[in-house]
Amino acid sequence: MRILVIGSGFGGLSAAIRLQAQGHDVTIVEKLDKAGGRAYVFEQDGFTFDAGPTIITAPWLLHDLFELCGARTSDYLELQLLDPFYNIRFEDGSVFHYNGDPEHLRREVARFNADDVTGYDRFVARTRDIFKAGMALIDKPFPSYGSMLKVAPDLVRLRADQSVAKYASKFVQDDRLRQVFSFHPLLVGGNPFQTSSIYALIHTLEREWGVWFARGGTGALVQALVRLFTDIGGTIRYNSEVAGITVDRTTRRATGVTLAGGETLTADAVVSNGDVAQTYRRLVPAWARPRMTDKKVEGYDYSMSLFVIYFGTNRKYENVAHHEILMGPRYKELLEDIFERKLLADDFSLYLHRPSATDPSLAPPGHDCWYVLSPVPHLGGQVDWEKVGDRYRDRIMAYLEERYLPGLRQSIVTERRIDPRYFRDTLDSYLGSAFSVQPTLFQSAYWRPHNQDRDIPNLYLCGAGTHPGAGLPGVISSGKIVADQIGSAGGRKRTVRSPEVAVAR
Image (cartoon, rainbow, N blue to C red; front, top):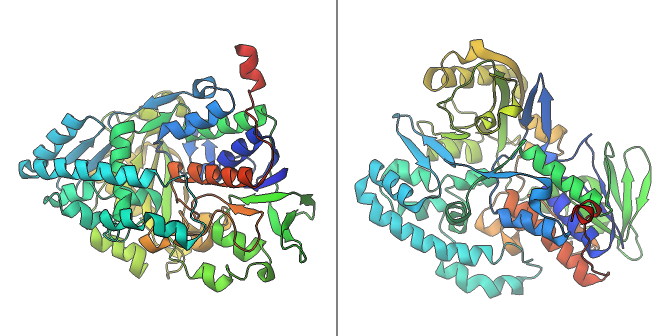
């Protein structure tokens, strides 16, 4: 079959590689000038900035893609295990050094509160059960309510109705430890006080399989997957914005896409890795989607957005780890401001990323490469970023300089930033949400936008807004779901060996 994939984020690349390996003729059409989507790369003044995701977990999902094509990950990419995974810093000056060593983690818990060690052990044991149940569903579609009923007993048994924050609080009493073991949903766009306790599985995922870094940055992983895709015969077209998905009124099937310049591309199936809300609102004719109307799509609860400052310094801060989580003075109340009240608070919690701690080549010699990320409300609120952006930037930089990076503002030699408008205008994300549909219980699995459209049978969706959700494991798995659905619908399957790898061997 001739298949068009809209967008070259990790979900689109995952689907495209698998479909090309099945023997289909696959073309990716990408709006921007290079691949990656949210994982775009900014190159500026000798610095390399990953625009979006920086945390790689579940490495076997990547290895599967390369092995499917007769290649090895190491033929294309170098992955490095990080230690620590994160430093989690609190306002009182305490620091939780987080890695995958079980005894180290127990010692860290004891250092914060010796009485919580037993509870942490119970948390680990219980979360393993959640991991087994949750990960078994990550690459399985939920096309019907019946498919949801099959897993309902496990969800009830594991108390999936509880939030991650409530779940963690049952096991540890120290408020800082409760934050350490409940913040992970923020990495996939979820509010820990609203996201199902199923997402506590991230702790087991990281503890058992680690947090990894791709040498050269996440952009190097994007480039590796693009190279793998083209090595097995796939085609990718850049600067090719899709203006619409064409649907035949008689057959109710997708027939291809129309590009912004007027060109029409035909296909036997279309896969959208674009924002799920905008795929329906902007690309699919309203008459062709009676079950995914504008009202239905706009009725989902959407995740927060992000304010990110990318900057380079002419000095190195050797006391700062690759990943730093900087917890502010408020936890639940700040998240309520972001997710519910949609207010830009006076305080903030931050993710500070220093990839040059692991890979100095991302910055000029003697320099450091950074980004600092602040979760902020999406554009459904009343924040005017044109007015507040500069002040918000200055507050964050002053905070970093005062508490963690002395002399910061005098050391900055290059800088750029993005806010919710970037997600709306450049990445076509509804409301400027950074992670699309929130991962709440009743916006998961069957209740989440489906991977195969229910009205247009040859239209498929992958990426953060569809099942199983955001984050690299989720979006890569969404690509596998789509490829499996198309494969089961017809078309020959074969394993393709990369010509380059075949020669090397």
